Length: 211
Image (cartoon, rainbow, N blue to C red; front, side, top):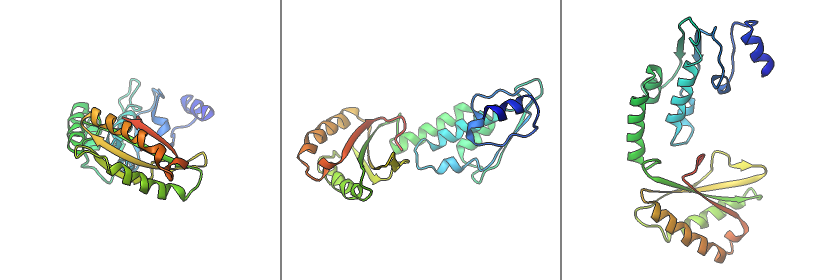
């Protein structure tokens, strides 16, 4: 990477092709054109923050052009040209994106409009998490308040990590106290669950990377 970037900075190449990593932290004054291909792929990543991440990437990519004395141009290729994250990124309109994204978060009860707790179930056995996750959901539903929305179980973004297979259950609620009370109840119940005792179960409140 260093060799390629150094060659580009010395103008030994006119075109640099790369993944998302090339939009972060690089300062090449001679770049006057940036093109982003399939800019909407990250919109469908199964993460409630996908629009935010898409906006961030496009703004960062556009910011690579015109960093010197010559003005720059950014071209965005997308199949979702009317999506607010892409429209706002193309216009570099942070306020418009924030307002529309917060409307979505409030409507769907996602952070920061509400609280999200991820409950991970992990095992070295590939098939075991399916049965365990089913029992975990049954147990969760037996003590879930009407104010708490239960989602899953499902596969997280990394369903296998270092030979450990994972399932995840999500709980959403506007009241942190309700989720905290539910977590304490679940922690007290788990030792008595023979099936679930074979799993590594972890709680993550308002996780940074929940999916």
